[in-house]
Every structure is written in C-alpha cells, then in structure tokens.
Image 1 (cartoon, rainbow, N blue to C red):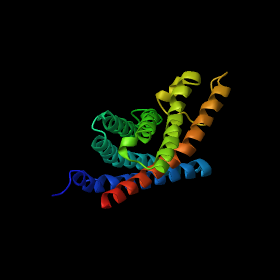
Image 2 (tube, one colour):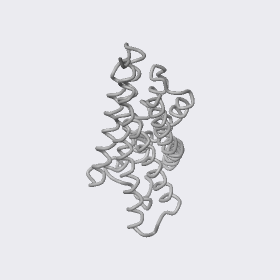
Image 3 (tube, helix red, strand yellow):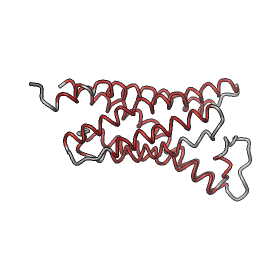
Image 4 (cartoon, rainbow, N blue to C red):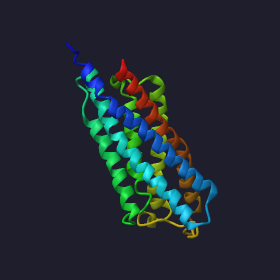
Length: 224
C-alpha cells in the first residue's frame, strides 16, 4: 500500500514547476528593470515597453508562486502537525495584493509604487518560511531566502518613506524625474532612493533565484 507521505509528494510537481516558472519570470522582470535604469531610453515607447514588461513579469511571478507557498505549508504540517495554515494563507494574500495593485497601476487607478508595500510583506513571509525547519528546506535555500526577504522589505520602505519624509503625492501617482524635490527634503529623498536601490539589487535578483531553486528542490524531492 502506498505510504501516506508519498501521496502529497507526488502532488508537488505542479507547484515545483510553477515555482521555477515564477523564478524565470522574476529574473526576466528584473532584467527589464535593469535595462531601463541603465539605458534610460529617450524613446517613450521603449521606456513604456520595458516598464510594462517588468510589471507583467512581476504579475506572473507572483501568481506562479502561490501554489508553491501552499505546498510548503502542507509539507510543514506533514512533519509538524501543530504547524498552522496561516503562513501559506498569508503568502497567497500578500501575493494577491501585489497582483491587484500591479494590474490597477496598469490602468492608472493607483500609484505604480504601491505594490512595493505588499511585496515587502512577501519578504517577511519569505524570511519566516525560511526559518521554519518543518518544511525541510535545505540550509542554502534558507540563507538565500532570508537575504532575498530582507531585500524585499527594503524595497517596501521606499513608498512609505518617500510619502512620509519627501512628498505624499507619490501615493497618488508617479513622480517624474523632472519634478522638483520639495525644499528641505533632498537628504531624505537621497536616503529613500538609496534604500530602494539596495533593496532592488538584493531582493529583485535573489527572490526569483530562490523561487527557481526552491521549485527545483521540490521537484527533486518529489522524484525520490
């Protein structure tokens, strides 16, 4: 008779492949963002294409990671029956908010930086899940996930810090590079942008890498 633990493991193949897909789209989104930031295209259409490609990549990245987050919770409960479903549900909630805010920004309903706030919450989940030993994640993935989670949290500091210390108008719409910084906020503006840059380099690069490697780990685990 098939063991009880073998049944859910075989069902982890789809979440595993989706996590790998999430990583691929996340890396593609990060690449589009870097190209935009480095080249700063003078052609508005090229700039819009790069930014929208980044946004679309983040949407797919977030959607594909949801089943993996739930699968990790299932594995944790198999090894530790006292584990709660809260972590998986929280991850899906945060990822859903990222998707909703990103889609709304497509249609200029909300500011295009608001998605960074729930993205920071995803970073918090990532740190928590990588500190949870019941799910069986390898030590290397745990360390990578914690660093990536810190990066995502740093990114979420930007819209909040900018609104509090520079200009609350950022919560209502994009701030152009040509718009003057309010007098007396130059230092705060520099600090929040530095935090954003550090968070982006760490979080947006390591988060999708973690997703892809974690998905591969889940696939190999299912093949045993």
